[in-house]
Length: 262
Image 1 (cartoon, rainbow, N blue to C red):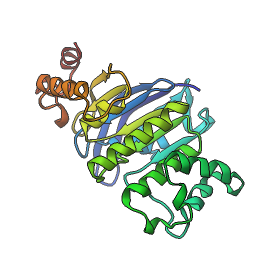
Image 2 (image 1 turned 180 degrees about the vertical axis):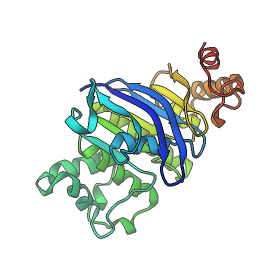
Image 3 (image 1 turned 180 degrees about the horizontal axis):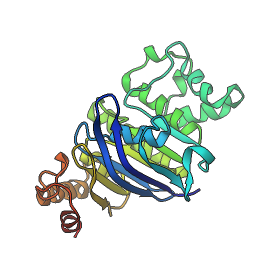
Image 4 (image 1 turned 135 degrees about the horizontal axis):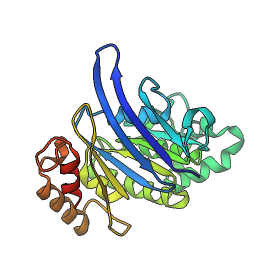
């Protein structure tokens, strides 16, 4: 498996002329879990869509070992988990997984359902499930392709706190088995601190990277851990406007980035 390199010189929507991403440079090493945090409208979801190959209208390149990602396909598989479960409502839970895996892989599909504790509802339809259960099916589906790269766009958004924490635990269990590279978009800083090896903070649109910070806390972690909450408090004490895309109250520049990372 190879590392991922993202270089976005400019992403502008042609219909509005709005530049949403500019001078983004990001490297992800094999097995690394990277969270992306930034203000609403900063282009976080757009960035994931570009990596997934769903949006190719930008200046720059996305490569693996200097080979274009969506030309030579050096990555075995890319998994994507969205803000909504996006299950097929006319298919059962099991058939939603088999739609991705193929009908000959029922044993693998059932094993994934066992891992997310859903073996007893494989013949249910998505409309019969709670929101949290639907997300568990979506999580199993994302891992079913054994991805080298997993893209996650606020996958636990709008869930109640206990359910979201339960899903984070399942995610970590699945991730720890195969260690795909992960790009995980979230607005919730504690979630990023609980899950990621690194957090990349974006500015307001047009988004730049304002801080690229390693998370040097032992796993497993939860959003309620003392160390997570201390790091959260320390980070926002040093950079109170960080979630608004500012470092030490300043617009992005090399000096402020160096100062914040020191």
